[in-house]
Structures are given as C-alpha cells and as structure tokens.
Figure (cartoon, each protein chain N blue to C red):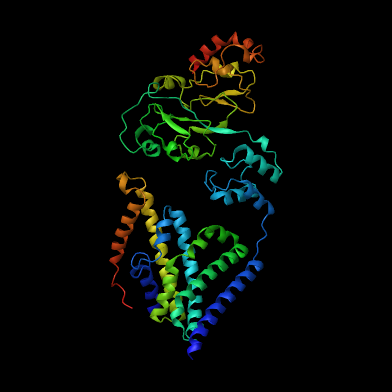
Length: 297
Length: 192
C-alpha cells in the first residue's frame, strides 16, 4: 500500500501527460493548416524586430499580409529597399517599381508666417486643439497646428516641430504612414523622395483669404500650371496639386511661384537645360494672364 | 434559480479579478485598448468554460478514484495548458475567422491564473458538472466585464494631464484598486 502511494501518482500524472502530449501531437497533424510556403520565406526575409512600424501586429502579421497581397512588398519600412527586393523576388514582383517615399508636411506656416488667432493653452495634442473654435489657434484653418501629435506617434524620431510647424527628416523617415493617419488636419502625405518639387500648402481657401492669414500660402494664381512643360501641376480647389506620374521635378514651377509654396527650387543656372526651351514660350504671355486670373478670383 | 444566481455571483460578487485578485497579469497587460480587451475577454470566456469541464472530469474520474487529490494543481495546469494548445490548433483549422479574432490571446491564457483559479474553486466547493461549468462562465464573464471596463477607463485616462510620476502603470494600478473597491459594493448581495 505504501509503495502504491508513490506509484499511483507517477503513473496517473505521467500517463495523463503522455496521453495529452500524444493527443496534441496527433491533433497537430490532424489539424495542420497548409500554410503558404512563401509565408515562411517572407517572414525570414523580414527583419524580425516585431516593431510594428508597418502597422501590422509584428513581422508575422506583415508577412501574412504581403503573402495575401493586401500589403505591398515594400510594406516593411525598416528593412527598406534591400528587404523589399528580397521579398519581391520571393513573391515574383519587381520591387524596383516601388519608389521610395517619405512623409511630407504640406504646410510651411511657421509662427512668423502664419498668424495665431488666439493663444492656445491646453493639451499638447492637435486633435484636441482642433476641436476648439476655428479648428485650432492657427489663423489658417488648413495649417499645421504644431502641437506635435505626429511627433509623438513617430517611432523613428523623424519629426521635429520647428517654429510651430512639423518638419520631417527625410533620412530618418521610413514612410510607415503613422503620422499621416494621426494628423487631424490631414496635411501629411507620403510623397516620392526623388521628386523634389512638392506643394508646401494645404489651403483650399481663395487667394485673398489665404493672403490674409498666411504670407506663404498657395493663392491659386495658376502660374505654376501655366509654366509646367509636362502638364503635371494643376490648381484644383484653389490649391496646386502635382501629378507625380508626369512630374519630372524640373523645378520650373518652384522658381516661378510668387509665394514660394513649392519646394525644390533650382538655381536658375544649368540643370534645367532640357525643359527650358519649352518653358520660355508660355512665359511671355503669362504675366498678363495671371493678373487676370487673380482678379477674376 | 440557484444556477442563475451562481452565474451572477461569478460576475459581480466573486469577480475573479476585482474581488479575488486572480488573473491580474492579463488584466493589466492587455487592457490598453477596449478592442484588444474585448478580444481577451471573449477568449477567456471560451477557454474557462472548456477548462472547467475538462478539469472537473480529470479531478473526479482520475484524481478522486486514485485518492491523489493533493495533486490537483499539477493535474489542472497540465490539462489547461494542453487544452489551450488543442483549442488553438482546432480553431486554426476549423474556424480561421474566430482564430483571427482570438489569435494572439489564446496562448496568453495558458498563464492566466483565473483559469486555474476557477477550476480550483469548483473543486474546493464541490460543485457538480453543471454548476462547475456555470461558475466558469460566470467567472469568465466577470473577468471580461472587468477588463473591458478597465480598458475603457484607461483609454480616457490617456488623455488626461496626469502627474509625471503617475503616468502609465502606477495610475493603472491605482485605477484597478479603486475599481476593486467599487466592486466591493456587490459583496454580500448574493448568498450561496
């Protein structure tokens, strides 16, 4: 009887363990889900840091989304081009087609350029401030509030608030898009890094109203539209919009913009040789036209 | 009537998290967002219900028969861990959508002491099979209620201007304490 006190527990608990183990092993085979072999390969190609920068729950989630086709091969912002290329070869997609992008703040209304309607005392949170009268303290209702909600959400330290406007460090930005979805004003956008010409304003107000609140806003004068040799920039809803499929980043529009809204100015000299011959032609009649345009608006 | 009271007692009076302080780790760990807290709550309800049944059978048909009741802790841990693994595999195969919803939380539940706690309470109070399962459902629903309420509060606290020293977990712990005091108000409401 004494010896049974020892043997009974050993056999029963041990037996239970063996039975459950065997059961699990069998169930593992029985319920084995056929996973796409690509999934493992993609997962291996990813950095494996599980940082969540891609917006999926860890690298596993990202790999699943890539294999399922719901995420692009360059979905991993940390791995960059090298990883995108590897995954591209696994998935049979050309990774090179994915042009590197970076977040860009479409506002340059710094404290000295755009006025404040009132002094804001409150939480350092753009979404909160925007719910106040007039959509925040900045006189331009479209402009960056500069309270740094985007900076807080950036996992890579790529955003600084400089003089009341968010500025993005292109080298640090991995284009994860978190700031884009965070910004309550929707003025951050992922734009191709190589195309240096970008519209640094989001105001859809009429020129006169823009002038009243900000000295560096797009006044919809259409000078850029008329000077573009590639038909790549258009004024839509009182705001210049660039079609990056057509834009060759020649910088002509940036040089012509009277308000300096466009980035990527070229020093007047050599580089813009090719498009230049085309450009001067529309240049001649332009001044009159724009004046009319401005008046009519 | 007694059975309904058993469930209600599990949810409010004997709330496993706020009155018996079991399952605190997931309660604090997975309660940052209401969405994930709901996922965790549903997964716990699911697992505890099945675990109660399994633990009941192991206890009464193996441990009691062999007079080795003192081994209940080891046996329950073994059964629950295996069960969670099995449930995960089964769901992955049979119901991918449910697996997607519960996915991350299922393995976490293996270490949720509320599951073991419910099984042990069932055994100690000598509940029969039906009572054991209902006590499990009630306790698990209580856990889900507590974690979802807690997540809701924490989401709102995030927006408040709190002293630096209280940011994050300190404030979460203080909140949990106050919630526990609030649930103390249910004490003695149902006598079983």
